[in-house]
Image (cartoon, rainbow, N blue to C red; front, side):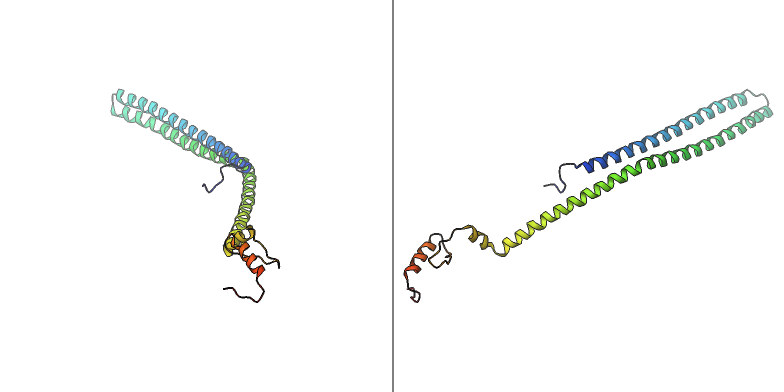
Length: 191
C-alpha cells in the first residue's frame, strides 16, 4: 500500500540520530550568536538613549547659544566612538559565530558521513533484494502467462491407457475415452 516499508531500520535510525544531533548543535550555536547580537543591540540602544537624554538636558539647560552648541558637540564625539565600538563588536560576534559553526560542523561531519554511508549500503542491499524478488515474480508470471494450461494440466490427474498416453479433455471423459480406445483396434475409425 505504501511505497516505503513501515519499519525503521537501524541504519536509518542511526543516521537520523546523527542528523538530529548535528542540527541541534547548529541551532544552539546560532541561537547563542543571535542572543549575543540582541544583547549587544539592547546595550547600544540603552547607551544611546542615556547619552541623548543627557545631551538634550544640557542643551535645554543652556542659557546661551554657544553653550548649546558646545554641549551638542561634546556629545557627538562619544556617540561616534560608541558606534565604532558597536561595529567592532558586531564583526567580532560574526567571526565567533562562523568559527563556532565550523567547529560544530567539523565535530559532526565524521559521524554523519559514516551513518550516511551505512544508510546507503542498507538501501542498496535492500533495493537489490527487492529487485531480485520482483524479477523472480515477473519471471513466474511470464511463465504462467506463456502456457496457462500447463499448470492446470500439471496439477490435474489424468488417466492413462495401457500404452502410457495421457488423455486430456473434460473431467470424466478421459476415463471413457481411454476405455473406448482400449477396446477398439488400432486402425478402427469412430462413428
